[in-house]
Image (cartoon, rainbow, N blue to C red; front, side, top):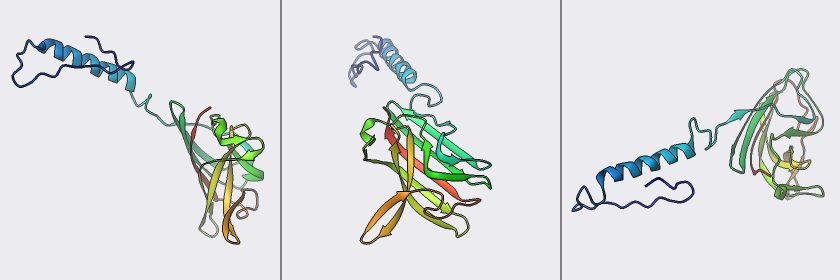
Length: 189
């Protein structure tokens, strides 16, 4: 029988200890299993290309100039699910000029953002101040029609933790060797 996978699951007849080699046919059993394994290999592919291979990308930015800083960013997409992570290390000409936004290389599903409301967190960020050796925790939300991720710093004011835009002076004044790392997961539009 030819394998019907991945459209449907194959049905095999398992021989018992008392089955003759002709019932089911021993040669047919091998042929069926070989067909099923070949169908699995076709579906899974070579080099993890279907199940998720990470690919480097160069993000776009909003209110940010990389200058002589360095960026490393990668993404992986499996069906309509994406994982995007990366880091930026500031150089002497790197600058945040407003509320920081970093391109995701995908459009996130509309469940994460609408123009009138910030809805769902899609990941976390680490904001590193090299001059003090301090890491600040941040969160990431989709913005601008789900093409940009906004980085927010976390702060304590009163009883609850709040968030504020990451900008030139928040959560600290950015300088050489400071670093931003992000790690996000989301459904692709």
